[in-house]
Length: 597
Image 1 (cartoon, rainbow, N blue to C red):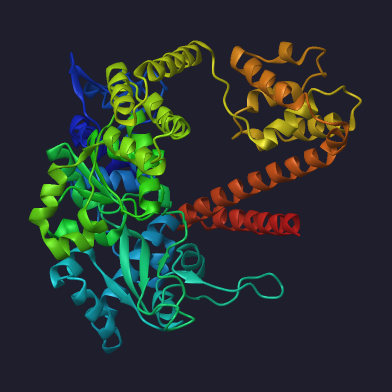
Image 2: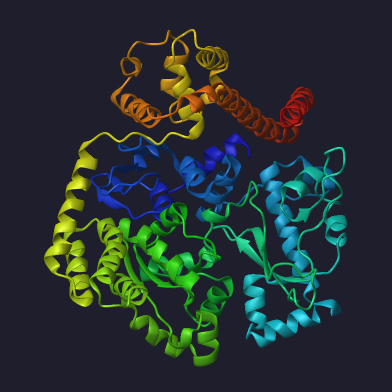
């Protein structure tokens, strides 16, 4: 993406309009403020400055311009962010079409992966009209999937063929791109090298998973045959693996189509399955999104929070769905979302309910949705139905963690009183438990919080506080001092650097550079104080393994960087740099293979 085009886009962009699509802005003099989308907070410390087309958060110190903001919000590269902003502002993009396979291969890896998924989507769409796909079309008709729905969601069919899609896509994309796409599988050969690629999805209906811009980045594929009919059919649903484009916990299915309605209605309907989502959307429920059957994550929570803080939850009525709803409620309530839970008669999922009873009756179920606290109280009563003292204690213990999550005092007390009344528990007991919880919350806010340390960090910190003559300390200090880049992504990096580059302190806490580091180190010392002599004797081996892992991670990070640099250098036609980087890539691959061996 040419720098002059990016500058033109920046000059012509209304940053308030662009950022306002992601978060709710409030006027603050000549500027704007909001709750920061990059960290958890209760009061707005994020400020937008139209005069300089920039933003800054006084809480987490994130800052940048409109492109930086879009890159971070949507996990895009800089060129992708420029194109995204230009499209939103109606600024024509420079012509960018591939006229040959070589030109396609010269594009960056991420752009090629997006193009590969677009090509795969078109391939599956075309195959849905083939004679082989007759059963797939019959299945869709039986499920009430109309031609309009098929077109809208770009549904397709993966033929029962191992090689056809690979042969078609290999004309335009390199083997490296195809292997990184998640569209293909392969078996490892005897020498450890990857074998020939074959289509991952076969004899299945395909559902593209779109990113927020509506571009396909992954697939869910439903088998036509069950394992009972065909032992080779595999799982009923098969999903793309995680790739540079796709992380399952960072995508909400249908958000690209539903986000405008969610924002205008200030409410979202969250379901589990993709068919639930598709069925409701095509019946006029245009603010519906799905978790795609995976656990709801904090990343998805932040994505949703950019558009609304009101959520209606309609998960499957089975035990797994109830458990998922319970966990999702916990995340939403803790972030002060207004949440309701929809319960459908007959134990039906949303898709089947709408097909059998119609969207009007579904709308009635939405209007009659329960408050989240009523749903949880009923769940407690179902799990512990006896009216004995023991059952009441178990029900109370089930509910208390949910009550403690609620940030608002009035809502917390209302939940507690409601639960006590319906469970037949003395409300004073609930209040006493809540009072203790409130005190714990207050103390946790007052006290500095140590960041959690990984097992690798714990092992290294334990070794570095041993006497200088100890072999474990000597090994850790020598390797870490010589390779500081190994620790750059560790939360305890600063503390490890101080301990590795100085003599073993008589009092390790005095070596910690700040209060947070002292608290972190004290936590490590506390949890390590009870170790047996036998476990201490294994520390040297643990240090060796930890250092090996850090070295391997560093090589992996550098290999990813080199691949990106090769793609960029190729795009700019800098063959000298490409050759240098290619040589480094060969060395990195060899070193990683040696370490794996």
